Image (cartoon, rainbow, N blue to C red; front, top):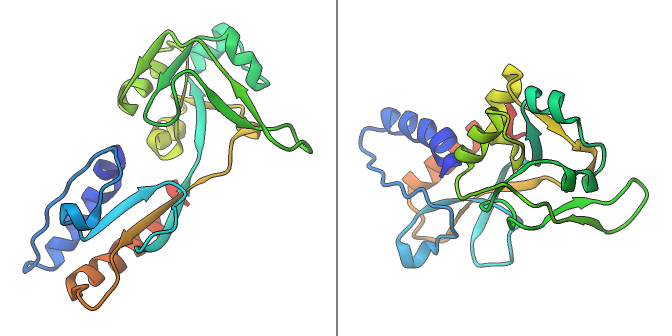
Length: 203
């Protein structure tokens, strides 16, 4: 839902301004939408895509990042390895990873992954609440990088343990290809893909 508000909404508004004959309906949800069953022309998927009958356009990628406020890090120290997190206050956002288990890339030169099971003081189901709690110095949280781009730029949050991040997560525009794909759908795909690929916060 947050990606829709931050990225899709301005693109869609600009598109319908340019094409007054076009009408649009949005559905911002944090779940996988079945395009055919729900009558959706285009969807945004932030995930590795399984094989399907859909056509996908890669438009960017995001990272799963750990972040905290400078005040929190000054008071409690900066973790230097994933296992340090068990000694820190954490805020779990269930929309990104299971609340009780965080996985990380293994040490340089090692294969596999590192699994950490922090004991979060707060478990939330929206990114906004996780970010708000982190901004107030309540602990370390894990979100997607685009969600905190303004806070990072302003220095209100800092990323920690970047060297242990898992590979970036791709962002695709997906649609059903075929003769029935309308010119309007194709026009919006091109317009949205160009805008998203030019956005530095997801590329």
